[in-house]
Image (cartoon, rainbow over all chains, first blue to last red; front, side, top):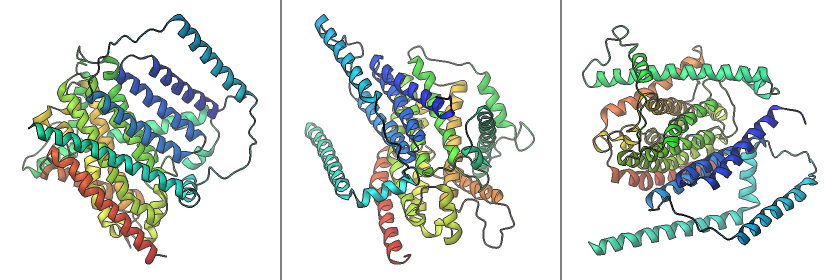
Length: 174
Length: 335
């Protein structure tokens, strides 16, 4: 393995992503956690760019780092929560089982990917991938796509119904 | 030239070339920002019947902004005791860095550009969305009610207006068949500027862009008579300057984007092709910046309860209608 620019970029992005993930688990302040999550999302987008999936990378930044993170921040800021809650400590047995679980997962992933060999097929997926995604989405996968939009519409209607209900209650009180 | 550089293999040499180019761009933008602030004050002064800065640096006050920056640099750097210190320090960086990153894909002329990205327009929208996180963080970390309200307002407003902003450009994407800013400008070479083909989209885009920039009449996030200064109430010195810088760099980027999408970028008017593209770009760009300043001088601030309704009930349906209309026109007339 030679030290190419791509390797260097991948390593730094992966490092940021992993550090972000670890910080997300270890920080105690909820807002700090969300900020760590933003770093993870952005560096994953950077890895998509390295794989020449620019469209995916841009959508990743737009949806995850932009929209979802801000929704989470709004949710956290608008709800009341107490920062210094002691989490219930599990017993020794629980910790042992957890450790076994982590080790088992690590071993499974290690053996799963260690000898994995994808055939490097020459493909054209990296050229004009926005256009290719569009064509595939609106021809081959049109039914799943439409179903997704129906689900999203249902969620939207549900959100409006919930919000309306609150309004009426407040109106009754007045 | 940049194209060859982008395709060459990575190395220390290339890295330093890119680094130098980026630094040059940074200084060009800083130069623009100082001049833009001066221009804004001068034009505002002109429209309000006063002189504007007239003392530092000759009778046009050319060094006024430079003096202001020096003042901010030597100012005491205050961090409130109750603030969340790491986030308070990180927030201006997160707010500013994306504003400079979006400049990478904006072609200034057909030769003078950095990255020629396939998804150039979406890249702009995505990266500029990161600034919202910075603003919200600043508002929260200051531990101040005005800051928090300002940050919330800024975030809600920018997220809402991002949607009509993207939707209005979809008409252009339909007509030019690409998200690449270079291709969009090239299409305008054959068909004429998109402001002629997409006047509705232009109006929607301009309004949404003004809201994205947090400028009057959409400056509710820093409405001084309600919120002191919004999310940067607690900031002083150079951290505050970073927020201001981000604001004006976005103004640069957004004006450049409007020029590219609707006004044909570096394309000349007919019979005036002997004037170089860079000059054309600068002219159109200056007109857009001037209109933004003109807005600031002449519009009253929109009310908070009208803000969201306007985005969701007026701009978004109009933008969707425009997409529908464009699709019909493309299907029936341009095949």
